Length: 165
Length: 182
Image (cartoon, rainbow over all chains, first blue to last red; front, side, top):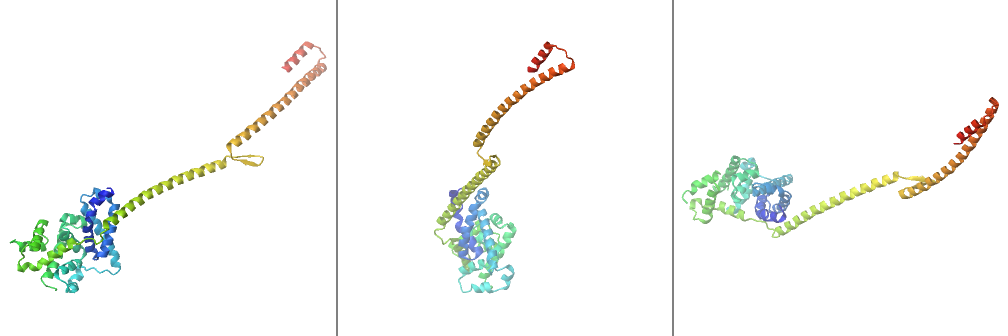
């Protein structure tokens, strides 16, 4: 794959990759930096991209892995992610977003979901990917994806049912 | 859309297909949403807004292009650099081997070290010529001594003959002399 082909096939995914990076890293600046690095990695793996069955899934997979690596570094620097355990115990995620309108609250709530749920709901509800593509990107089974997606959506539903607002 | 509540329940249970989800999105974003479901409108508006998010860097394509060009050039540069380094190392090694070999092939003439093969060959030829000349003159001297020796042996034969038998067979003696001279 030469540079021209790379730019035609891969560059149009830049905003999709950016959104995934932002969803995972929770920060626009980190996400913008990550996209540059992800594209340089993709360029390094252009031969593998050519052989990939699903180019979009391949790019998302590389982007996710890069963001998770980045997240590990950020976590070491006190970056807090909400896990399944602390999510149900704490009311703070809802309280934190109480002053904002519901549109923004949904966004904030998704950002506070555990990583797998956040990734799955992002890939399904924002990127409109099929379950088999999400499975390829995350390495989860379709059943596990549905479980994570259902949990994520139910939590958003709780927000609208006013359970914790 | 009559079955929207059922579909919404399926959506929250993650049982909807992409087509069904598209119907829901369409309903909540463009349709006349019932009062009881109005609150869920915010969910789909939020998802739509998030879908619109994009890189703020307007020059992303250009800067990435420049980076990739630089990366490709630096790759070519690395390949050229490495090839040159390998070639230079090869010729350097070859030069070293040649130098060591030339240091081992030398001759000493009058205490002077000669490394130049042509010069060494000329000196060797001159010396050889000198040796050949000396050898030839020495050989001539040796031949002279040889002749004297032959004559002396003839005289000795005469003396021996006189002493032992006092017989005088001059023909036989002359034959003997002739044989010795040959």
